[in-house]
Amino acid sequence: MNAFFQELGHAVLQRWKRENFSLAGFPEIARSALDERPPAEHVDLAAFMREFLLNDEQPFQTLSGFGQPELVAYTHPRFYIQLLFWLDGTTDIHQHEFSGAFHVMAGSSIHAHYEFENAQPVTPHLRVGDVKMKRIELLETGRTVPIISGPRCIHSLFHLDTPSVTVVVRTQNDPGTGPQFNYLPPRIAMDPVFADELTMRRKQLLDVLEQIEDPSYPELAQEMIAELDFERGFYILQHCMAHLQNLDEWQPALEAFETKHGALASGVAATLEEGARRDAIKEMRGSIAEPEHRFFLALLMNVSARADLLDLVSQRFPEEPPVETILRWAEELGTETDYGIAILDAAFPESLEIAPEDQPDIFMAALRHFMEGGKKAPAALRSLPVPQVQHLRAVFAASSLRVLVV
Image (cartoon, rainbow, N blue to C red; front, side, top):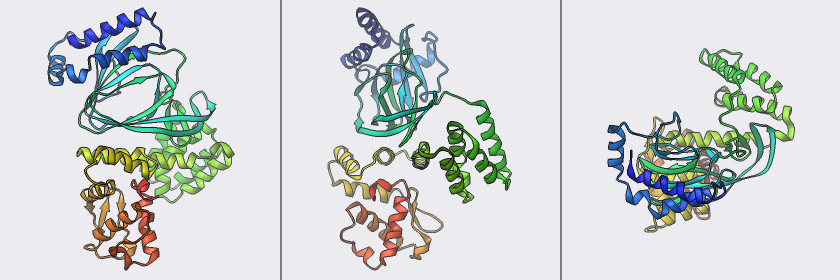
């Protein structure tokens, strides 16, 4: 049992007791205790891991799947202290059913803050509204951030280093602040714990039809979506999206949902498209270990305006202009495919019929041109007809690099 976290837990307990265990006061108590003796400065991570592996006298460990892994370092009936290790984890946009504070003990993260406006309950487990980013910041080792339960603290974390380690001092549960919604920009809030068993089995049965390439799949999915209530219809639509797009049957299913639910369905298409974009970036980060490149992916996932992205790049890498930094990353992330060059998931279009050896210069020149506002075309683009240049823009706009060109 680690002495530092025992002392930290005891200090938090004594201060909270003096506040009569006020939930409203706990985030500041947790934050101040972490900042007074920062774990980043006082805990030897390697020694902590060795002690945890070899000493059986440890606090009760939960079965939580949150973290990679989660280790409980101190526990009390009212609160506990956990260490969350992150190897390639990226949290969904979420709120909490508990309060406290978290401290970056090792590594760094991109931290995005959101708000949910015009909330309209559809069921107890699903709401529609407007998910909007308020701000985004870089959290370096040693930073401490308070956690407020409920919708006043909606955020996401993209961990940049492997591993990143977060120390969390948190209550067990704050009554009346659930469900612990996840948010899907720009429109949906959903309870990730809620499970509709019938919908789950229907999705599994649809997977069977997909695997055996049953030709009735599109028709059955569309019939379901046209009849189901909003919540179940949304989950079926979300589940079927990729396969229906592959079959070129997505638009009829989406129109069936929109016809069924009218104004309530506004923004659902954009929500599903955004979810697919975020999932693609999460998948890419699994094969990318370079911290600068992971930082780039974090910005591509979370930042919605090019100016904000350039500003964050400039803050962390002030040695060169941000456009040059991004172009360097794009070149480093470039790969050769069977058909030509690709930058992440933006592939040079075959239809332009450009020789493979000429594609890298043209693709990079196009990216620079669009990032700088598309005013004066660089030499590598001047020989291309305007429709071909527009086609290159469309390729970038349909990829994870979209924020750089729109």
